[in-house]
Image 1 (cartoon, rainbow, N blue to C red):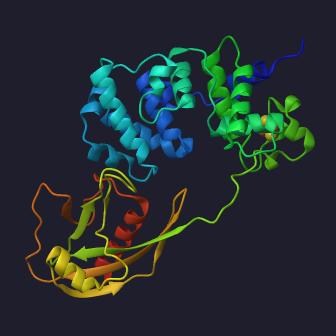
Image 2: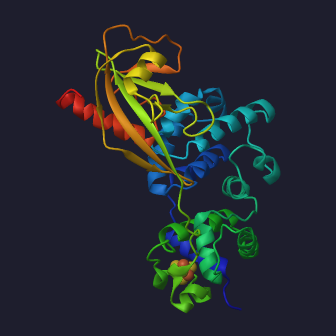
Image 3: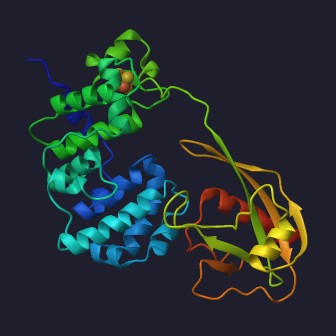
Length: 355
Ligand code: SF4
């Protein structure tokens, strides 16, 4: 009898799998959950230092449930997709309140928690508890779409259904945790999106895309459509202490709960807006070239304006959703990537010439 897909994969995993990932040491449901959430849309190499810092700060469910969302977003800064961090916090609170502080151990109950879909729930139960569930993350989708040479985009529900069936069918009866890690590792290290290393692949005999000679054609990418453009103007306000004003964004919506700069509508006059909205006169200002940031569903066009506030009368009261920050002291706050880049540029300018 010929060897099966899972047998080939497991043999390969024993010598080529990534055995030393930090979440593989003591793989409790909590630790696997944190890693799986971080790994959504993010590569392992990026996740590792974030994971290590996060687990050091929040080693277990009680510490995470009792943390402030600000602390969590601060540790998440730079990892992107911040809804993941907010969902993690909310889920920890729910687990603390309703599940005695332990993650539930059934697929259905896990999937009721914010941010946990079927694949993440399956991975947690399989990798941490050895239960038998299929998974279908981005890497697994790619491997399976190539194995079967499925011609359509996997985002379509009928294609996704087909891939789930395939994932279920290939699941072995034993060593399910190793198999799950193996197929994820294969997708990340051999069956990569660009330039897959097919000649070294343990499952090349069954791969239809490889047999056709065009593995990179699978899976088909999301149909392109022009992303809408949104515009905003951000004010990098400086006081006479050289501090910059940061504002906490509303808890939901774009960059929810993160810190950013005040936004002034593009059609308004900046000095007038500052005087009317913040009560502070502007001494001098400078417009920077626009900054573009791409989100999944739109592109944000930011027009930065650096402005110096006049005099002393510009204190904000604590606690507040506005805060004056010294350059270089913001690392504990959750800051979106474009804001971090603008702050770095501002710091360079302040250390060189005044705006
Ligand atoms: S043979 Fe190539 S395309 Fe097919 S699963 Fe292996 S690496 Fe991916």
